[in-house]
Image (cartoon, rainbow, N blue to C red; front, top):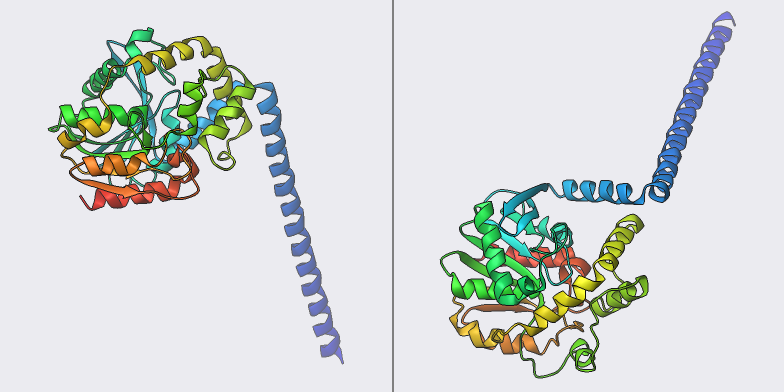
Length: 336
């Protein structure tokens, strides 16, 4: 009897101890939840009170999460900003008109494990000081990029490029085959005589400049040009920062648009027979900027090309199918 009472008391103390421990765990979880809510609340407050600073912190975290570091190199054109990470053979990423080096960050994650990656803000774009309009002529801008790579100390490299940057990549491959090891056209390049006109080319013939942003409405309209579905998610502080910067540069951006359009350069299919390096053509079937029928024209003119034409993406496959595009490019590099 006494033994049974003793066991009952012990069990009671054990149950009370378990209840106390359970209560402590619940209290701790409440503190964690409250702390998380406070952190989220502070983040929302910061985004309203200090939107510019919030966007900068977010961008720094985004860049760092990809193993990239920020750099600035002094050139005759002024300071040029770029991101760098990884080790191995160098891959240089060149964006298109009005774009940014950060647009390549997610795609570069698939490459930086086996290569050194350099993501440039092209001279006169992004964080770099704006240049005089004549500096944006495609012939001059190609020389500008080579000048920047010389200043960084890049001798031999693979190049992945989009749109306007893709034209420059092909010219460099033609003019400096000893430096350029391969070319990847990630999204359609400019200056290919496709059998069919794109929606944007029709708009240009009607006197429009679809990619020049002067307002929030214009920014949203350009997103519709670039992406067949909804644009990739972008945190509001970052979107607001980039939008404000574009609107602030609206006047020079019009001049840049005109300078690029006036450039006297050959179509890519005309210079393609002189490009002996392997070339990856990744041209989305829903691209409204340059018609996908141009991919076959360019591929036929190149001595060594690989063509990928995915569905469900537009002019910027490094953004709307970043992981898939990165893997395809990694496989291309691995096969060289």
